Length: 395
Image 1 (cartoon, one colour):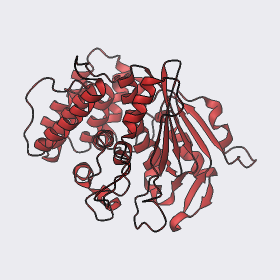
Image 2 (spheres, helix red, strand yellow; image 1 turned 120 degrees about the horizontal axis):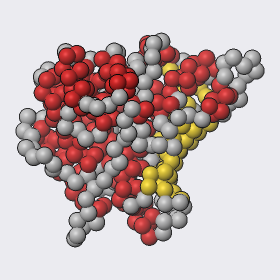
Image 3 (cartoon, one colour; image 1 turned 90 degrees about the vertical axis):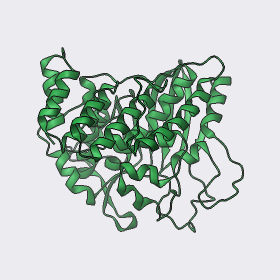
């Protein structure tokens, strides 16, 4: 739940002009998104970067006390959780290819400069720093994620577990690209046996960037690192120099602001903590990379309708749920919504089940959706079940 004092500076009933800064502390993005969206539209300053009319607040700091509450379930926003999950895994594995992501969201190709690889993919810069699509023989390549893991393993109190994403060798003014990283540097910090993750950001779009993409992407990185280190998940802190809303998003914004009800899935279900089995002769980090490689192998087969016929395949439970998601997505694309919903019922994480079911329900017979919800949440109190049903079936 958001601390109410955190948005006092954007009180639009106050006749005095609000200060330029913004500090928000909340459990997750569902706790502040609608109110902050409304406040920025009403009180943000007018700027026009790249000729795009924009409302801006700066600087901003967003502190998430419960980063596991990663999925935005605001009515009217119409998120794509299948894409969000696959993108987070794609980043975690250090990939840069357009083809994998465009299967889940074709529109993402417009950020590729017409190339087979993105210019500045977060995963590549995290796991293969120094490489680039135009560098045949890269130098000084580093796995920054592994470097941070080893630093924190060796010295839990270190303040040196930093990953850089902005690279002046490739992101300089001469680079011809529309894909420059918005999130430029990251830092892990363990305090009181909890892992905090701070993101330093030059430019954040509230609707498509922060709450739709970054919160999911980076909470997965945070929770995965915490899992590997055997510590608790702490806070996720976004330090943002420009937090903004674009005029061209007005249709989405009005749909969200005019919604007749609110919904936060985490008021009804708890997020599922990450876990990975330990293997005697391999560290959890090595096991993670092995399972990531295997995930992409079987996902590629799944696009042809070839699926692994076992109850459990991955020891990393997030990958195991994602395995069910790409199978459900295959049937969704085939317009076999009954099969898609049945497979989705095997997903262990309740928040994933609800958000993905809402996505499918936009094209599916409501009868199938209601049956799936009643079967999944048998025994849930009636009020919570009603709230979930309403969110899933009313767009």
